[in-house]
Length: 138
Image (cartoon, rainbow, N blue to C red):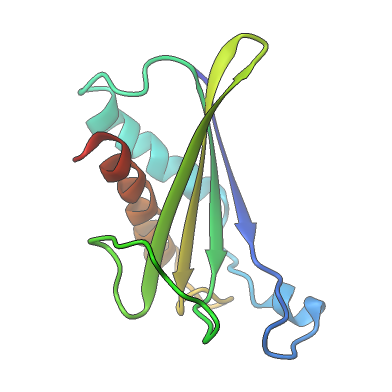
């Protein structure tokens, strides 16, 4: 089993900010934190329950701030007024190996250059939890 985790930061210009300024507002937290969170979940939950044992998995974490134009139709127990989650997945075959591609969107007013590693890790943990609740019901 191979797992890849990538992250995507929105560079939409909804508020009249230049792309360079938007890029400077991204988090300074290392992307490796996302991998550490997944490894923790894998060790303490997924491996013990024998979930995700076959195939490959590609996770993409989408981060954005909540804007006035956003509408949320996905109901989650983790959604609050300042944090919204939305997982989406699909199965594909690459060279005969099943690959599950999972996109997890998190819109949160805390995403900026000042987010702390602890807050970032908590949000990523909730993002992965949202996927497992949607897929496995726990």
